[in-house]
Every structure is written in C-alpha cells, then in structure tokens.
Amino acid sequence: MSFIDQLSVWRENNRLEFKSARGGLPRSLWETYSAFANTNGGLIVLGVDETSEGPKVTGVADAAALVQDLWNGLNNQQKVSANLLLDSDIIIQQVDGAEIVAVKVPRADRTQRPVYINNNMSAGAYRRNGEGDYHCTMEVVRAMVRDSYDGALDRDVLDEIDVDALNADSVRRYRNEFSANRRNHPWIDLVDEEFLLRLGAIGRSDRDGELHPTKAGLIMFGEAWRIVDAFPNYFLDCRLISGERRWDDRITSDSGDWSGNVYDFWGKAYRMLSDGLPRPFKLGPDMARIDDTPQHKAVREGLTNALVHADYCGRTGVVVIRRRSAVEFSNPGCLRIPVEVVEGGGVSDPRNKTLMTMFNLIGRGDKAGSGFDVFRDAAAYAGVAEPELVEYLEPDRTKLMLCVEVDGSKLVDDDNVLFGGDDVVSSDVEVVSDSGNGGIDVGITDNNGGLNDSNGGINDADGGLIGGITNNAGGITRNGSDVEAEERPAVAEEVVLQIVQKNPNFTVSQMAAALGTSKRSMERLVSSLKSQGRLVRVGAKRNGHWEVRG
Image (cartoon, rainbow, N blue to C red):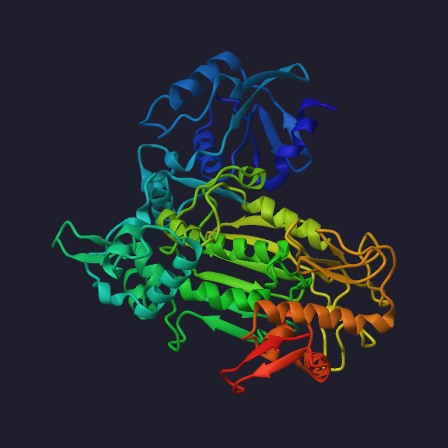
C-alpha cells in the first residue's frame, strides 16, 4: 500500500486536505490549519493535487525551505493565534520520486480556541465541514470564547435580576432531596439564604452589594419567564414518541403551568424517560424495593449530562426524546473535549460547573468522567447497541443516543396473578439479599413458570432448611428443588408479609408496585392472607395500618 493510500483513514469526517504547494507555502494552508484546529484536527498534505481521478503527487520544490516557512508562520502571532504543532507533527516523505510534506494538525484545546489567522478573530476563525473550510460566524466565535474560560462562568452574579426570581417550591424540594442524600451535612440547618449562597445559587453583587441569583441559580431554580430575561433562547423539551405521530406526550419549559427550571424539568423528564424500562423485582435487606437497573442509571446520567453540558447562551434548547427502543439527549454546544476522550472516560469538563455541583449534591452525576462507562454498562446489561455520541455544527449541538430494552411481554395486566397466572410478572424477577442479614434472594421465572434460582430455589443468605421453605432471620430459604406451581401463591404470600412487616402503612397499590404486579393480583393475595388470619387491617381505611399475625 502506498503512502497516499495509507492516508485514507484521515478522510473520515473530512480530516484530510491535499494542497499542491508548487509555488511554496500556499496561503490557503492557514485557513485549513485554523479549520482543523477549531474542529477535530486533520492532516494537510503539501505536494499533492486533488483531481477528479484522485490524489496526484506533484511534489514540492524545496521541502526543507517550505517547512522552515511553516514554522516561521506558526510562531508569528500576526499570522496565527496559536502554534499547536510539535516537531513530530511535520513529516517530509519521498513518494514516487518526489518530496511531499505532511502536517498533522491536532484539535485545539478549548482554552486555545478560537484559533484564528491574520490577527483577526472575527474574520480569521475557520471550521471544517463537509464542504471544506468555512468562516466561523460571530455566534460560533463567541461560543468558543466562552468555552475558553477555565472558571465557573455559571457562578457569575446576575445584577439585574432579584432573588425573588427563584421559585420557592423548587428550592424547598431541592433542599428536601439534599437532606435525604446528605443526612449529616452541615448545610442542612442553614436558612435558605445562607444555603443558596453556599450552593452557588445566589451571590453578592460587586455593583450594589445586594444578593442576586447566579446564572446557575437562575437556571436551576428560577421561573422560566425570568430565566429567558438572561438567556433568551432558553428552552427545555422532553417528548415521548411511540409511533408515527410527532409526539404522544410532551413537557416544555415555556408551558406556563410549572416552573420551567432545570431542577423541576429533571424530575418530570426522568419519569417520562424511565417509564416502560424493565424493572426486575428486587428487594433489599430492609424489604424496600430496589427499582434501579443499569438502564435507569444510564438515563439519569444522560439527562444530567445534557443539562449540565448545555450552552444556555446558544441558539437552540435542550431536547430529550424517548422512543420505544432508544432515548436521545441533545443539548446546545459542542463537546469541550474530543469524542474519543469522552468515550475513554476519566475526564470530566462540564460547561456549567456550578450546575454540576448542584446535581452532584443530590446524587445525580459525578465529576469523575465515568458517564460513558455507565452508558456502555447499560447497553451490555440490556443486550442492545452501544451508545453513540455525535457533534453537529451550525447550530452547534451534541447528541447522545442510548438504545434501551423495552419488552412488552414483561408488562403485567390485571388478569395476571403473581407466580400463579398464565403469565408471570417478569421473566427476570430478582430479589436481592444482604449477605448475612437475612434478606430475600430469589431468581424467579422463565416464561414457562418454574420458580428457581441458580441453586434451584429461594435462598436465604444466612442459610435455611435444605429441601423445604423456612423463615430464618427474616429470609425465605429453599434449596435443592424447583418450587412447584401449586406452591407459588404461598411463596408470594410470604414475600407480601415480609414487605408489610417493614412497611405497615403501605396501600394495596403500593404493595402491588413493590412486587411489580397489578392491583387486582395484589388484592387476591391480600384477601387470601386475611382469610387465613395472617394479615389484619387495623384502624380506618385511610389512616390505618397492617399487622402480620400468626
């Protein structure tokens, strides 16, 4: 394979440019240098013509002199704003008896962007697209300038907006969630003003000495109609699309019937996005249901990332779309680090650092750059395609596509009875235990109805009576044989009693949700337990509670 043929890999994403250079260093080289630096890097090959029949080697007259001219230009800030090249990035190569020069241009770090030429940022910045090099608009230049700043721009105080622009209910809900996630945190007992000050949601103005919202505080907790005062193109959009219609359900920040801020949007959007994802039945050692799966974690991570990486000064808004087999997260702004670095993990560079911290403090997202590992784990768990991350230019956007598993056969209707109807609730129901604490460990059924785990039954981590069912330290144990069909309702009843012992105020609907079955099915189980005298309702229907007896 010839040297030119080996360059074909650079053609992907239009990262290869041939230039003849017969008369020395071509002037257009600097435009391409700027374009590659401001996009995803690329390779400039001098001494090769691009013809209709393919690249044709023409060579350069004096390769050494041409390279020297190139270095002179790179080190002259009147010619180019930043020299990104190392000695190893310029290669002189003999091809077909002629000398050519290959110049590898890396993607510029965001702190060096925009890379521009002729000492003119507004007219000398270029980027690369399918047609070649093109002038950056001032909108794009301003976006690159914003991203070049290394601090937390979203902590800037908005002098023109008062603290009353923040929605008090949103702040209260956030504080409740904060307290639940950070039980011993010293901020819990602070008054709202002091709490928001430390959180970075408000700050003291240098102009009037008063407290005002920060950019992050307004976006996170503000009323949408106040947010657009500072960010005119602010818009959040979550759609559910199940078929050919434009959408089946939709949440937008400008509807006027809710706050429209990022914090409340996250909660509303997550409920829509996670609806229908398979939830294998899991109970922890405290008998509380564990609904989390790698897919749910990936959806949370994707939603958080879209909101904290969004360029709220950009032309477009955050758009999240839930399709039957995929979730798409799209936010304004390009990636601040290369795609391959994001996919490699370990590096985090959020556009809105304060917003990221606010989410981190309530258990959403992290700063470790592990998000793509979460997405890959979810794909492996569900047996679906790998996640896909793509940048789009003009307008600048970043889109993440997550394929998800949604199996309609795992959904239950009112005619199914847990462990006893024609169909079971799920083909992969699982109850997890705490080793040594007596939780329930169940690997439940295939679609043919056999109740079993890898050891042939229901297993208590503390050990139980082999060959029979017993209650040992709160767990149900069976080992050595499959549970027969006629025994399944009894097993289900034992699980219900365990749940009620830990959650005596549960309604029948909550019990059904905990077991992943229908309310009708749960009513049958409860009726059976009541007729046996093992479950008793004490007190009024609304304010009463359950007691387990016998």
